[in-house]
Length: 78
View 1 (cartoon, rainbow, N blue to C red):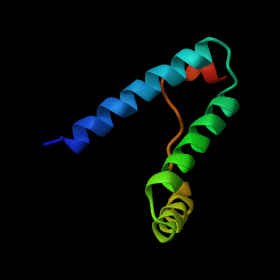
View 2 (tube, rainbow, N blue to C red):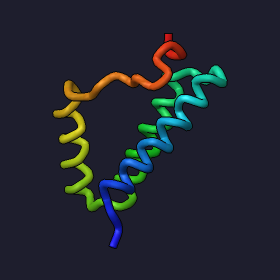
View 3 (cartoon, rainbow, N blue to C red):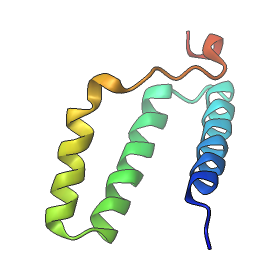
View 4 (cartoon, rainbow, N blue to C red):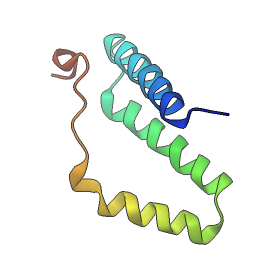
C-alpha cells in the first residue's frame, strides 16, 4: 500500500531541491514557475474527467490567497 503523505512529502522535497538548484543556475524563477504550472495543469487535464478538471481549477483559484511564498534559499530569489 502506498503511503500517500510520505509520497507527497518526498515529491515536494524533490521538486523543491530541483527548483532551488535551477534558481542557483540563474534560471528565471518566473520561467520555472510557468513550466511547473504548465506541467501540473497538463497532468490534471490528462488524468481527470472534464468536470473534475474544472473543479480542481476552481479549487486552485479559490485557494490562491492561502498559497505561501517559496522560502527555500530565499536569498537566491532576490
